[in-house]
Image 1 (cartoon, one colour):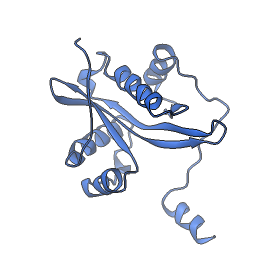
Image 2 (cartoon, helix red, strand yellow; image 1 turned 60 degrees about the horizontal axis):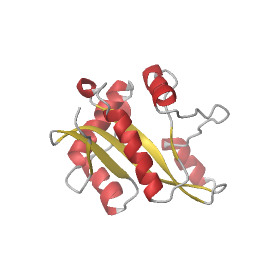
Image 3 (cartoon, helix red, strand yellow; image 1 turned 135 degrees about the horizontal axis):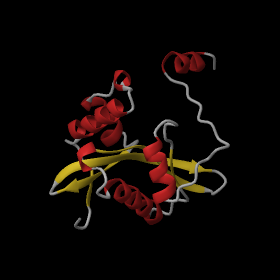
Image 4 (tube, rainbow, N blue to C red; image 1 turned 120 degrees about the horizontal axis):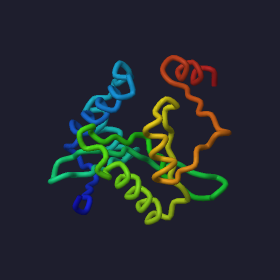
Length: 161
């Protein structure tokens, strides 16, 4: 494989981003949960600048993506990068694109002075877990559980202020 090629998403890429989001949701058996639209992606990624997208390319075509944003560690006293989604098209897996995306994100974190790069993975996704732990030397945070408010529960919590 030749040297990996990357590019950051720019306005006008909303359709490509949404295609990757839908493909990831299909892989995770969560397609019915996707409500994102190109308009929402444009607003939140490019206008409000709340997330960024990195593409990995093969011969100029996007074959994988990583959507990420900054978080903050009070213990480290600095920002980190949280990887929300990483996905490589099935026909391009096994060629180093996923590892390349993670390594490029790690480089971005270092370039920006961030203290860490972190992400979550579904418990049943053993191919990804094996990849993260064996090929990337990532450490699972076994003592932490992610909690979430969304939809009606988020609205209810906001009303109880």
